[in-house]
Amino acid sequence: MSKEIQVKKMTDIIAAFVGYTGIHLPDDVLAKLTELRSKEDSPMAGLIYDTMFRNIELAKELDRPSCQDTGVLQFWVKCGTGFPLINELEALLKEAVLQATSETPLRHNAVETFDEYNTGNNVGKGIPTVWWDIVPNWDGCEVYTYMAGGGCMLPGHAMVLMPGEGYEGVTRFVMDRMTSYGLNACPPLLVGVGVATSVETAAMLSKKALMRPIGSHNENERAARMEKLLEDGINAIGLGPQGMGGKYSVMGVHIENTARHPSTIGVAVNVGCWSLRRGHIMFDKDLNFKVASHTGFTM
Amino acid sequence: MLEIKDSKKILTTPISAEDLKDIHTGDIIYISGSLTTCRDDVHRRVVEEGLTIPIDIRDKAIFHAGPIIRTLGEDHYEVVSVGPTTSMRMEKFEYEFVKETGVRVLVGKGGMKENTVRACQEFGCIHCVIPAGNAVVAAICVEEVVDAQWLDLGMPEALWSCRVKEFGPLIVSIDTHGSNYFEEKKIEYNKRKEEEIAKINKEVGFIK
Image (cartoon, rainbow over all chains, first blue to last red; front, side, top):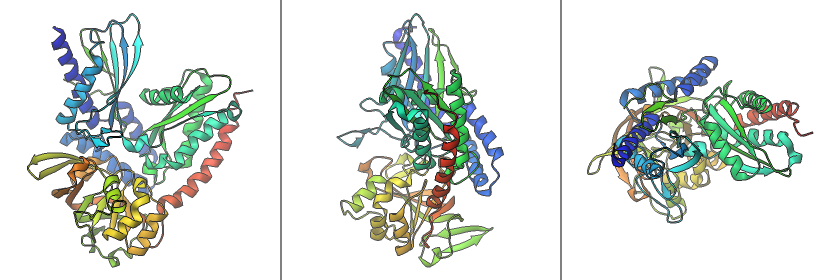
């Protein structure tokens, strides 16, 4: 395959996959929502879940984006230094967004800052967002796709605590955000928490935490315990679906962490709504791909 | 007009203040007739810039929403997906907006606060939420896009005036009597939050 054909092939796959993730929810999200639906017993929660599941079916049947806010496209790439398209990757992701925007179609969500106009094609300065993890001595590439909707970006928050505030401060930081902003961000939420050293390290981790499959745990035993404590705690607040009341508020709480400066605890929270449009696709050097997030995707 | 059909409460535009009198927070209703998308920029133009809204929404409904639209031909559009956006962003404009436009029903996502409650009581208006993220359920209630204005604002922010049929389910979150579903819920949520924080804090004293 010539370089040109390779680029076109990967662009077409990513464009089709992005469109697909706007219409079909990932397997882990569907399984979790099915579980939470069965555990709610109030008529209001029942009505809301019935509407959600009817929408999931209709989106599939009519081949339309399940939520009108198809977000700002964000890509987290884990790319091997030997991956043949490493040099072309960022440009082809942008091209894939343009393609998916007209083909799916997706909503136009790129507004240039300061000049304040909608570009009308979903790309702009720094959009789509691309974050890189470079993997030495590997020739594959994994791409996490994410549609960052406005409603669920609003609760996002990061700050640096003094160590005296401790993990108790982290707890309050997360819990306060749930009752102020979380209830309007389409619960049941997936809550990502970054615990690190500065605002940007914590913030990046809080987003990365949302890429983990639901049901996974932090490998540190205490961090995993805190995930469970926060999950139970936020559920007990009783936000329920759409924040209108119910037994379950979240699909999970994921904490990602790094070491910290002795004088700081960087903390951030980032949430995904129930309609978590996250995809995970893995390429080998010949551009054979596997999709980890969705069983139904084919080219 | 308010009618009850197959035990469904349906408001059909034009809607009067009288039609809203017996509607209370927590009720489930549906809307038929005229529903126009109106979000941040439209509110800003009307309230801050004093522009006249180019679509008459008096006694009708607005939807805090930015749809995905497919253009079918000149001035001919289709709503592919449409669902509510966070209503709270419109809170700072909503009293003046309702006063200025005479709109009767606001549809959106999540709660709103005292400005909107005051508008609803004074001018006879309600705020409802449609379960969000259900953009196909909502889109298939749209029979036709009858007018599109302020297209310079871009697809999400423009005014898309739709004829809808039994658009819903809508859960009433602010009624004409001063009740506010989410603000009342928030008191419960905050109380339980404090109890949960106290419980968690017993187990996270990792810094010794």
